[in-house]
Image (cartoon, rainbow, N blue to C red; front, side, top):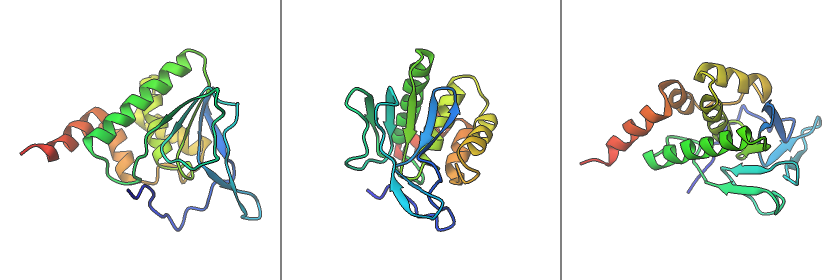
Length: 170
């Protein structure tokens, strides 16, 4: 399964991860320093829960961390994949309420992680528009540049789930 769309105008982020709200971090598996050299972002012991929407061997997290892995495409999602996003967001929100630190990551930390982070913020009481804005302020203006994901959020993932499920009827 191809999981990442190539966004030629979106360079690797300048940090491995950014704190979106206290305890909730968004990132990727790669980042670039000031010279443009790309480095792996390896999660160690700094997070209690790591949600990976893309994986690479050797990128952590530490064995003491809870690690949830659900590979998602950076494109239109099936009803089952949207349901997975909802479940991951609930797990992240629950962990945050328990005072745990959470990292949600994908390849570069722009779209798939942005979708789960935004839905986590919605679970915590933010509006979709506020969640999207916060992510773009704290991670990157390039975050959530996947218009389909932004539409899922503004429509509501529960509605997107129902509409995506219509394709399987028949």
